[in-house]
Image (cartoon, rainbow, N blue to C red; front, side):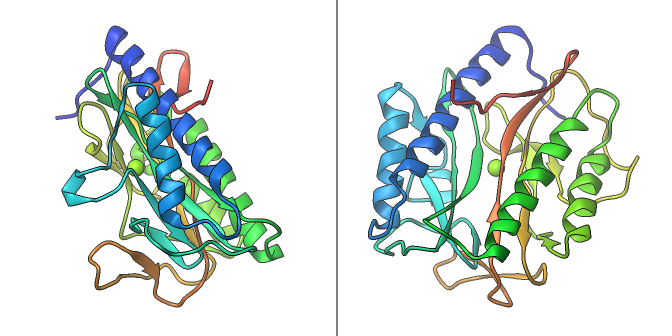
Length: 249
Ligand code: MG
């Protein structure tokens, strides 16, 4: 059963999305050589709390921070701590905010200073795959159309999509039905209908798709040590087409 959102619920989700986006922006602005991932997390958390919202991920499955901050070959879910950001790192921040009973969720990979050409291309390809996928997130499309759009573009560019982790529905819970994979077959999977809200979140590796989870039980890293990027928006399916809720206005 997929919970649909209309009217006031969508307005609340818009507010949750807006705060999530502002927190992501604040985290991005905190990234510079010499800061710890914990300091970046604190910037995101302060922003969320300044709007009277709560960090969606804090306590989710026992997660101990507001944001997941994953560097270079780290894919997702890394716990902020004493790791120091260096010039040339790529830093993925995933953060959500909860307010009025609803969640927002978004992610972006930031460059710290000048990065390699390959890293730059990875960021561009991943972000473009997200925006291409958002364009097909409309009434009458299927979940497989979203996945295919991401996968096709990413693989054409010589990179690979992570399959072990996927996007998701979002609303009163941060993770709801349906699952939204970043791979798929056109015309397959569940139908997108008015009122659905989904988090589309391509995770893209320079090397192979395989990932592993470190002993801390959280950190997901590429198995081959290659760089990884992650971009995410919360998107509502509306009569007027896809509506991105995670905009920092
Ligand atoms: Mg998500």
